[in-house]
Image (cartoon, rainbow over all chains, first blue to last red; front, top):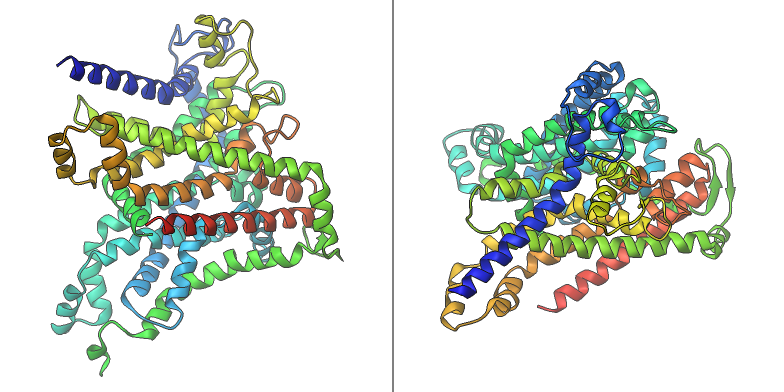
Length: 276
Length: 294
């Protein structure tokens, strides 16, 4: 009986330490974002605001550049996600349901592309984009994202497609449906959870992407949020309150999406990791 | 049409469906890799108008540069510690929350919050958290009398790498935790019941049932997190920018700086090639070793 008790205490302690590690930095983010300017820089540091204020959030939202960054991020992430899903759905279907010469090699390349160091190829990618005269455009940034979001999405979708019995399509075909109809009417509806998971993950990746946005979007009005929030870092002083408020707003969309598809996403990721 | 009889093995359909993916990968991933391989034998500028053949000299010069050696030393420390700590913390987290208790799904979600936060935001949070005057870390350590003076965690050459590693662990362990939670759930409950009958203790349970049961998922997760860590750009870039005294510069941040700040494109290409080859070799050795054990 007492042994059980010790176990329970150890477990509670372990949970407490874990949560402390996760939450302590987050507490500072929230605390600062609700402090007014004088409190932000007041010493000694107080862990919680003495007076709570929404001023930082108001400032973030009314900051013209922030709205532009948010808009840019949203456009890029949404279009990237949409295009990725279309291309990778076709790709994943082709790789799992058909046989063609070179299929295995290319599938290996899809898996291998997970491991490519994007910084290592940033120069040639930049030169391609600038060669097409697409720097400082949404199109340029989106193209540079597709190259790594599509393989990830295929990797996730493959498992979901394999989970759908071929017989379902075959029986639809016997009933006179064309190949496309069989895909559209039978496979696609069953794939909805998989598409949700892959879409969320791609959105998550492109929403927070930093390096290519830094390189390709040199014009301030075209920057996305992750590079844009660096605006608040001044040469001598960083306006922490507005920065953290903007950061919370920046993190918010992915939280909402994650909460919505958490189950399918975890299933997709672990499935992909186990089967390789 | 005999298409119907052949069913799903139409090569043409496969080629058409996978063509966009393959083209994208070749043009934007593998082509650039080859490009870097070729251009690493030249010195050139960003527009590619001025090119000068250097052959192996560029590589020799790079390897003789103590700066390069420092960068790759940093890379080893960074990758090794971040990956292994993410593994340990991830496993610990998974074991801790993998049971039914009050609001357990809330806590499960809470521990993956850092993983969902964008990398830039995570790095900025920690820049504030580590801040010499305003940071909670210094404030807390002083309040419990561990520190006597404020410490600039990211500014001290001896501390900066350790401090950056902690941030990357915090940011990334959620992915490992997610994988291991799923892994724990895939271990058949009967094994534990049989173990209980045989009277095994907590440690035996962990080392003889839990760990072997998750071996595959651990292998894959370690490989993925290892490669991602080596390639992780924004944490270091935003936290320290590679400083102080290049103590936290890793290949990816150095490649960027060489190319886009110092306009030393040749060196940047060479570093990129060395990094890719290095990751490739380590990955192959890792796969060979882990597959032999079976």
